[in-house]
Every structure is written in structure tokens, then in C-alpha cells.
Length: 252
Image (cartoon, rainbow, N blue to C red):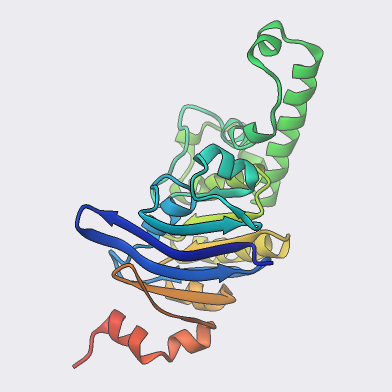
């Protein structure tokens, strides 16, 4: 069974087809990269996979179950989490508190129990804090756990967002341009982190413009162009595909 199956997926915005008749599948424990020129439909695809956008047609199956019509929170609870192209971090909270937000899917205490501070709530809060600390440590952020996010540099905030996504214990992690705005050292650290996430058993779908990073760590690469599947295969196959080269560089 494939972890994720996309069949005949389509998204229209008025008369514009942002995604058109897209088909692909993703196996477990790999880094599956999605690349393409600006406007190719990469972020739109992520928004469809998490049902931020509702598809105009087609189906998405996760772990064999149809998720096309499920609300985003149920998709997250099934095991799909994501990071965003533009940082989505609570700047008025500490790093630890930001990551604790990612643990809410594993909370079961109700409003009344929380208001009364029942022992079950205290135990659950302790468990959530420990889960958040483990995610911070995995991302080498344990030393800034109690620092406000507003005081952290951009590269650290990128890793903090990844830690929050990991705290939700996903089976599939969608990463939207995680290397954007990073310097060479930060990009290398990110590359190592993504590889370690995959080695831990989490499947990754990566949207990224840094081709050096993509070709170094990906197991499979899918190329979108104007919302359509242009090519897919190993990094080597994509690097030597004449249609992909033409889409990126143009042709005489």
C-alpha cells in the first residue's frame, strides 16, 4: 500500500487551472521532492493535500483512506503535518510554547477539566511539555527552549517551525521551501535535519527551489509545470531530462 495516492487531481481558480489531472503516489520513508518554476502549482498542491483548498476534481488517499473531503484538523490528526513558505510562528510565545502547540492533537482534556485543573490535566500538560522538549532536542534547539520566539534569528525560527510539526507525531511531513532565506551554513544544517527526520521513519514531501539540496537528499523528484506533471523519477533522471531543462532554462 502506498502512503499517499493522488489521482486525477484538479484545482481551478475561475478559468485558471492551477493543478490539472495530476497523478502520483508516495511510498513510506522517503524524501519526495516537488519542484518546478514559479507559478507551477507547488504550494497549491500542498494546500490541496491538507484541504486548505478544496479540489475541483480527483481524489487524495492517505493510508488507503479517502481524505479529499476531510477538514484540515482531521487530516492532521491522521498524520499529515506541514511547515509553511512564510513563517507561521507565535512571536509572543517561547520556543517551547510554540512547539507545545503542535502537541494539541494528542490532548484529550476538555474545557471544564482544564478550568478545574484536575489531576488528569496536570499529567497531560507534563506529557505535552516532554513531547515538545523531545522535538526541540531533535532539532538541536533545546538551548533556546525558554527564549521568546521574537528574539530568535530567522534560521532558528525555520527549525522551530519544523520542531512544532514534528511534535504532532506525523507519518507524512510536508515542507514548503524550508531553505528559503537561509545562508549556506544554515542550509547544510537543514539538509542534515531533513535526512534525520526521514531516517526516523517520517516520510517527507519537500517543495524547494534550492536544487543542490533537492538533488542531494531526495529519493524521488516530481516536476510540475503550469500545474501539470512534466516529469518524475530519480534525481539523476530529472537532472538529465531535456523537458525539465527547457522548462527551467528555456530553449532556443
